[in-house]
Image 1 (cartoon, rainbow, N blue to C red):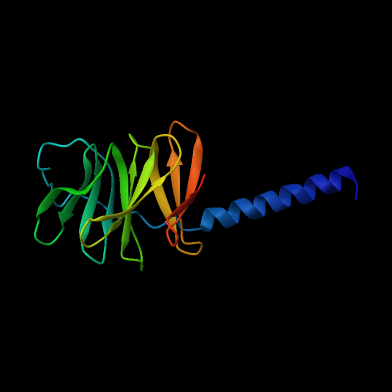
Image 2 (cartoon, helix red, strand yellow):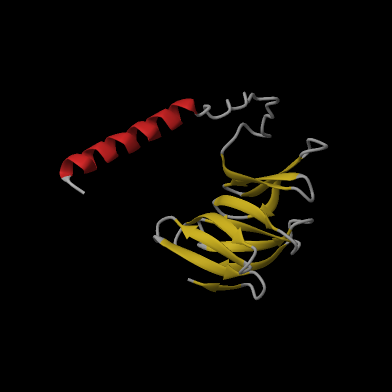
Length: 163
């Protein structure tokens, strides 16, 4: 095809695309979100990352002295549900009965009984563990080590660590 023919075909395709997109409907408007309630902490704050255990209906907050637990139904606080040292994050590991929390001041992750808060294992990880996330397929916790620049993989089945 000659250059002039290629230009015409290009203009036709561009025009068809423009007219097709002009007739397209805009995306649905987004929902309006609003704060429905504010809950004051027991001592004014000083927490880090939060997670919710849907089974026990508890909110967990990482704090300097450990994991704060808040019952979403009764509105009852347990200021130190799980003891810790510079806790940044806590979460419940689905289908295990365990929770995990990072101890930034001790370079460890605590594995705890999700119903009682009793620590069942403390696993050494990298430097200044911060956030964590659980992968149900591999059954590994991925722990982001803030100062170390590494991610530690913790096998919750054996309570071992692979940094």
